[in-house]
Length: 625
Ligand code: PLP
Image (tube, rainbow, N blue to C red; front, side):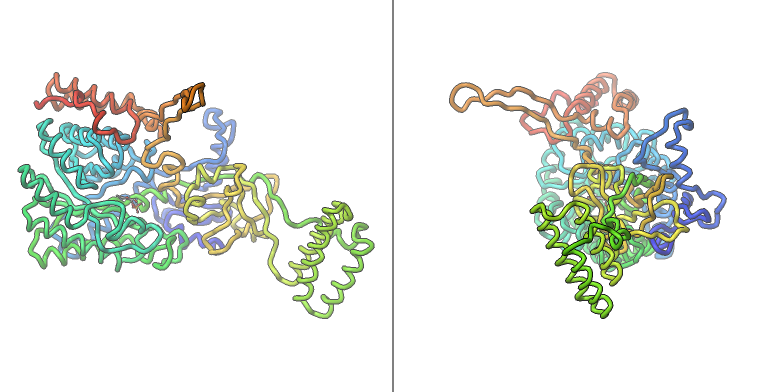
């Protein structure tokens, strides 16, 4: 456990048991030892062809623990409840889960169910995400917030207005100034009074990898001038009372509470200014950013660790909002956060198997008796021995490398046979080891695709705790890197949480050698091709045809629809549609419910991308009730 720092990054959910295997404490308590689950046993059971009704699942395997998810939600809520109580804060905390972090049907449904006692809601950033959030929240607490973020077109805004009509506690958050015109227009047409939020572009900048979208030049949100224009437009439209929420997000993995408090303090000032300008403000939504300590170092100087606990995070937020609001005599707002990484990272483990290794050690022990180290080469061996006996290790290393280079050249010219080359490789390896110039690193072939299952390892070189899930009572004898089954040289993992480029590992014996990637429950599943559920693009095949500049489209394949991408994450679009249709008949008149339902059906069938305004079909809008 110490070698892999399990206690550092794994607590309170993961530990090593007496059998030397990873055990999962899904309730987050070390005292309930009888409830610990041996991860290896789960893997064996899942892959046993005789259990689970003969299913015999293949690895790689994602093992999910809903109890961990429940515990994370409860811990987040109680951290804020405690901070609110100790500060004497004048309102409450009400979080939402950004579904983009993991849109898996069961993860989202569990969050709605577990969070229902404390009104925990959902955040959506695209049309398919909004559809799934709407249908899941139909079964949740009616006060839970439904935050609609992301770039919006008329169809997205209409859908959010429909959610409002279906009695879901919906807030449409402006990310771009132009969205306000669409909201004013469509809400008047639909006779729905929306609740509007706006995302502010803060000056506070998060300098880590995940802070690229923060600061004045960030990608999202409204500048100070834009906020003022939006307030004016809403005022002119008689809708300033609809503006009730201020949102910001300075990036994921906020490294320190100092930076957090700085950002929250700035946002609280904007919140108070909006109150002064006449908006009907109620909620401050501090976005995501609550970090995860991937390497267990509790450091605020790296992208893979954070220097605070859940409790310290909540205390910093509550204190910063209270200070500003109290100073300006503004009623303390409801505090909302959109923590994704911190909620879902721990709840799943990706387990995969090492199916073999390639060794860089080439039969070194047979070198000295080998008949292949003959002639010229045995002369080299004599020089090498002299250097070694003289204690000149530097010369030994230089000498063996030169020897190897020379032999490779001779091999290319056909002067050295393969056996001789292998013997020289072995000799070099042996010398390196003997003089302590580094152990040999083996390549462990693991049965997964890094691109599909751990895309951030490839895309942004993120490091996750990856360790064997058994044999942890046995000293590892080898160092290795992990190489996946894709035929792509980037399909490897050679950066680990210990800061090194190889991992201490055990010899792979006949019984199977299983490794786990931990803390990857956020983003990894969602990014492997379906980030924000946008799915893939449409594809056309174009050939040149007769005539100048002429061509023919020989094949056209539309990209997946909202329904298609939802199906990939195990949702059932047909059932979701039925739930929403049923709700429409419950909340609006028969005629309008039918129009709403056909509009919803159209959205399920359309691609998730933005629809150009010119082709937006206004006939899909119901008349007012
Ligand atoms: N909210 C918004 C607007 C985001 O862009 C993100 C992710 O980047 C999140 C919430 C979730 O952030 P985190 O995973 O750091 O909690």
